[in-house]
Image (cartoon, rainbow, N blue to C red; front, side, top):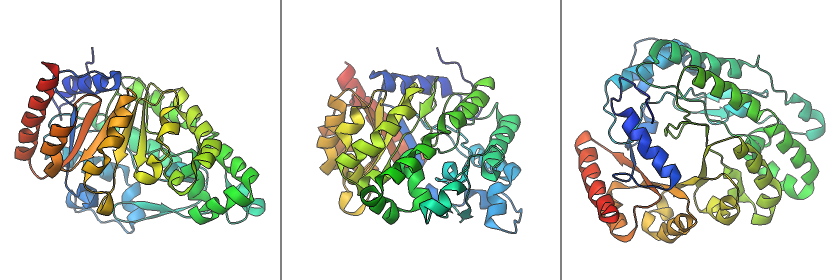
Length: 367
C-alpha cells in the first residue's frame, strides 16, 4: 500500500495507486488524468515569484534557493486535481546529461541549449569526459538536496531529465553530422554511442539512492510518481533515420537503459518516431508509451486513434496528450483500458468537470 504524504496534495497516495494500476494494465475507479495549465511551459513562473535580480539567465538557473523557492511559491498557489502531482524535478534543460561529459550550455528564459563539441572525431573525442566534479552535475545535485532539505514534507523531489544514447550523441555531434556519420563513419558513431551510455546507470543510481534515502517516490519530468525505478527512455533522433539503422544503432542502447528499471515509459515524439513502434514495443521492459502527437497537420488526435489502439492491443499503456475539445469524441470512440489522459486546462472548474465525465466513461467499462 502506497503511503506517501505531502501537504501540497492530501490525496497523493490515493492518486499514486491509480498510476501503479495503469502500469499493471488495470483500471481502478477511473482512468488516471494529469492536468496541466495551457501554455504553462512558456510562463516564467520563477520570475513572478520573487523580486530577486540575477546578472545573467544562467545565474538564475543556478540559484538553487531561488529555484526551489519559486517552485514552492507556485505549489502554494495551486490545487492538484486528479493525478496531477506536485513534483520538483531539478532542471538545467533537456541536454544536461550530455553536459555532464563536458562542453557548455546556453540558457534562455525557459530552456537551455547545448553547444555541439564534436566537430572532428580524431581531434575532439577526447573532450567527452564524464566527471562528478562537472559544474552541471554538481548543480543538479545541489538543486536536489536543497529541495529535499527545505520542502520534503510539502512535495517530493524527482530526478532530472536524462537523455543518454542517440539523443546524447545528437547533442554532442549535431543532427546533420550524425546522420551523415551513420553512412560515412558508422564505427565512429558506435564509439560515440558507447560513450553516451557508459555512465548512465551510475548517474541514475546516485539520484535513485538520494530519493530512496529520503523516502521519496521515483519520478522524472513526466511527473508520474512510482514505487520503484522510473525511467523515460527516448530517441527523438530516430525520426531522422530508417528502421534498419534504429534497430542497429539505437535499440541495443535502449535495451540496456531499461534493464535496471521497474517502470519505463517510452517518449514517442510524433510520427517520425512512431514509425519504429514495433521495434520499441519489442524491447523487454517498455511498459507504456507517451504519445506526443504534435500540432499543425498532426492535430487532431482522431487521425491517430488506430495507432493508439495498436499499442494498447499489445498490452501497453498509452499516455494520451488530449485536447480538451476532443475529449467527448475520444471517449465515444475509445476504450478506457490502458489509458492515461494528459489534458491542458484553464481552470479548476474545467478540471472537476473533466474528472466527472471521465469517471462516467470509466464506469461504463468497469460495470
